[in-house]
Image: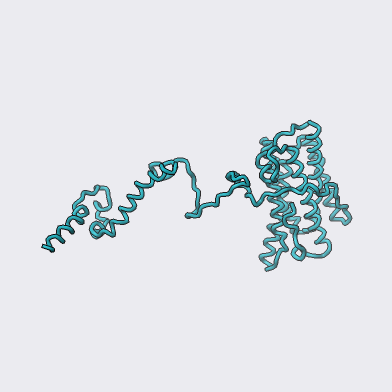
Length: 330
């Protein structure tokens, strides 16, 4: 009696698995699934659990207010949000709002030091200093003829060029540190920080004035020439290269001062500050374009002092690695 009951129970459990019809297009119809996978409950349990999970997923999405996935198994509009299951960290602002920028992060923001001396000037004494000074001055004439009082357009070209020296210098110091097995004194990071800051100036002024096609062509030509020229100059003489950038930043301070004069005189409309500038420099929500130009000018003054300082180190026969870099100077 007991054996009959055991056989009945076994048939009741295995019957649906042995005799249930399966679609002809499945793997079983092609003989690819072994019979054990259709008989043993453990082999079927994972499949049943997967099917149950598929059925439960739309219900959970509905309960949590999520959009159901499309028929092809992908979200309707959702893009790739993780790399091999590593979800990006969600960042928020101080007021709890979600961080909206990908080009910089909350820890990259800062309050610019606008108390810096804007009139400081390094008097050229040695021949390389005089050469760097007059080379920069020779570039002022075509700038004035070409841009005149179109300060926003000039800022676009200026920032595409100004972001090159920090990247070139940081890259060459990085390679030197690797091949000589020596520290950099923090100068790699300082120069790359300068390049990134200049790039953010460009991202800001793109919101103020969109460059025309011929301005884009001019930027392409200027950057191509300047990058290669500065690369060779830095290899030949870092002290000359840094001095040249120091004088270039002095001219940038002067250019932004003229920009501010036209804003204060009403020649240029003092519009609302771009949102990217408000978040990057931690400006008030009601900041205007004048506030943006003010902090950009202060950044250029800091870059001026850093590059003159780096050149002075070389003139004294020292190496940058032996003198701590002014990290976080802006």
